[in-house]
Image (cartoon, rainbow, N blue to C red):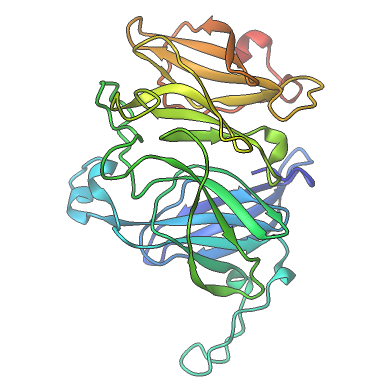
Length: 348
C-alpha cells in the first residue's frame, strides 16, 4: 500500500517454517532504488492465509485467517483447495503495527519463567485483536475517525474454494457456495491500542450495503487510508439474487455506502469479468468521477476485451478487443502514462 502523505510503500512477506512469521517493511521510493526505512517481524500461531493488507495514517494492518493443512494431501501433490482447509469456528486475528514505534507501550514483561527479564524488542511492538470467525482474501480500505480505527473487507463465513478455471454455470469460484457463504462487504471497528500485545475481547463484524456476494473490491486510489463512499467490485452470483445460483464473476458492481444503492454492469451471457481498475478522470472533483477498466472474457467467442465503463453510472464507454484471451481472474492495476517509460503500443 502507498501512503498518500509520504509516498512510501508499506508491504509484507510471509515466511513458513517451524515458526511462521510475517515481515512488515516500509520503503522510501523517491530515489532510483527503494530504501528500506523500517522492518518489523510478526510471529504467527498456526497456519494462516494472509493475502492483503491495509494502511491508515497511524497503523499497518494485516488479518490472519486461520486454516488447517492436510499434510498427506499436501505431500501427494493435491491442489490448494484439497490440502488447505478452513479451521471451523476459530477466530481471525488482526495485527496492528504502529507506523511509529512510540505509538505503543511495550508489552508487559513476564514476572517469571524463561522470558522473565527479557526486554521487548522491536518485533513486540504490535497489537493483536481477535475478530469474530470468518475469512477474507481482499480488503477495501481502512482509516481512523473519532470512534477509533475502522477497516472494510470482503468476508466469508469460512475459506471459499479457489477453482478459478471453472466457468460452468454451477462454478463455485470464490462465490456464494453453501460452505463458505457469500462474500459480504463488512466493516470492523476497534479502539486504538495503547500497549503491545493482545487486546481483550472479540470484535464483531458490521455488515455494509452491497451485492449479495462480491469480490475484488476497489475504491478511488486517492482515498487510501481515508473515508470513502463508493466501493466497486465483481459480483459473484449468477444474477442479483440467489435465484440464478452461484456462478463465476458475472458483473461489475458499484455500492454507494451513503444510500445503500447497488448498481450493476452486466456483459453478454457467458462472459466473465475480471478485477476492475479505477482510473480518476483528469481534474475530477467527485469521488466516483473516473473510469473502470475490466478485462472481460467471452466464453463463446474465446476472446478477451478491455471494457471501459463510466464509474459514475457504469455506462460502457468503449471496448478494446485483445489479440489473445486473458483469464478473467487476473489481478490488475492502473499506472499513469507519466510513470511508464515504454511506447503506447507496448502499454496496450
